[in-house]
Image (tube, rainbow, N blue to C red; front, side, top):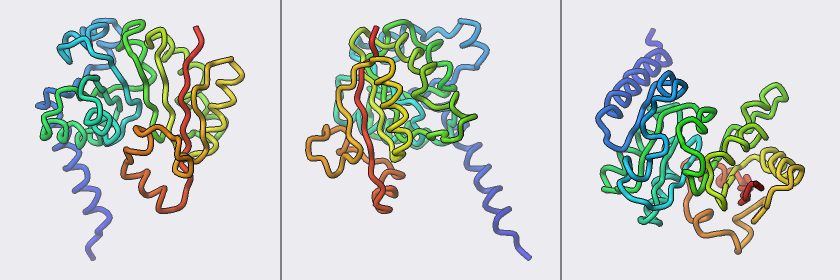
Length: 235
């Protein structure tokens, strides 16, 4: 009897390997080793705008970028801004990297690394904005250290952000939205915009409602509200 589950696993593994190999040929993909980052020999730190993007335009990150849909979508709307998607799963952002090359978008790049190393791949004040789109809410208490808006991660973001740098959080998780609001209010950070259901609020920013990922469309089909926070970390 044919085991279709096993066949799909084999096909999926082959596709991942193919994408990993193709990523190595993409000029818009950077894949440093963890050792290079931790040991401080990663040459792009402090040089992303000048060396990678070859300009002095603002630098915007999407953390946990998945397939890179938001990174590419933002880049289409703002050609004079640099956008860098970051994720450890290169087989996922392969799609975004390939699309950016096919559309000849020079302001798009992708970095394969762990999010917890973000303060070691960017210099102090090097980043102008950060987008966190549909992160895993890590609801269980023992997983709090992995929540992308916990105080430890916020300290990392504050280090690499410019003086007036902005952070955006877009999520389908009301838990993540409420948790982050509580953290921001507790630490006295500047909440610029907050709404628990942006598609019923006609004042939501265009870049928030005008770009939808594949999974976001699924959430909307399921009638799940999409929440959004825009905030600035205090010095």
